[in-house]
Image (cartoon, rainbow, N blue to C red; front, side):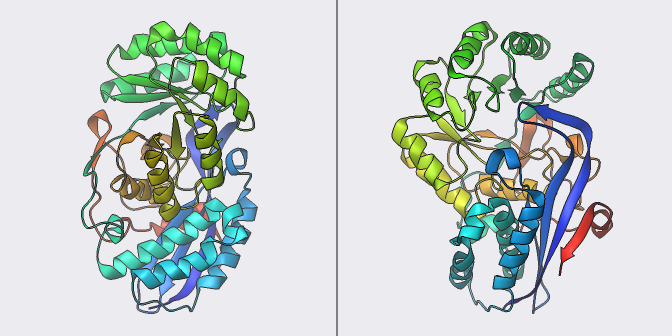
Length: 375
């Protein structure tokens, strides 16, 4: 079979609630959508969510990169998964793919979705005969919000009895007060972790840990700026909490540096940030082999396409410390998928059924929120 057409869309969907953290204030989601069509009538969907403050990518740059990479994959034949992987490798190892991981994530995912739909198997089954995990527990994520917006969100989190909660923080005094309020409302049960998105210096991060010690926090994600490797190492060595590298780890080189320097305790693997499905599996395995834990994260504003991909990735990963994703119904004005890829009570979800990603395109929604850039 071969791909005869790859369409690239630029996608912007308004948030139902403005999402804030230390590095960005967002009122709409920005993404690229890639549609792959084969000569035997199958179609695959992929998504990438470029975030400049994470990988230095721009939406327009990712669109252009995706268009160029799509051109290298059309009208190239493959017969099986081995030849498909070989074809994908001819592009994924190029500087363009490495410099535009979100663009490559969208292109690669569209190809994998297409092929597994042709094979009539779920996407995870392309990589394993049986899943590592069949049930999943998602985290709630609480952004920086004024109290009048925070309390209604906490009511939802409490009503769903969410077991894991991540809280965004950016200021020592206000952040500790914010956390205290959240713990008081949610009670002693949930595992609460914090994410500073690089808001603090090393000394400030250590002071924040000390100030929030009585609240009961399980881990500290990205306490210092991604450029501050020495500061990250100090917080990891001197602090009370396990640290998680997010913006500081976007690729294999970043991970190697942090492993060598003992610069963190664990890593946040995100499909779009890390350059797609196959590379995310590789990074996950490398982290565990070196004694580091992983959480499977997501970018705010992901549609059901990346949410489904994250669930398939979680099915293949050992020792998932935390799992994020599936927030479309809570964050976006609408989705572009017909299926609702969400979690239920306590954040629980199961394996996705169906072929490929298990999602289909809502063309009306795509036409409303997307702009076709190349076909």
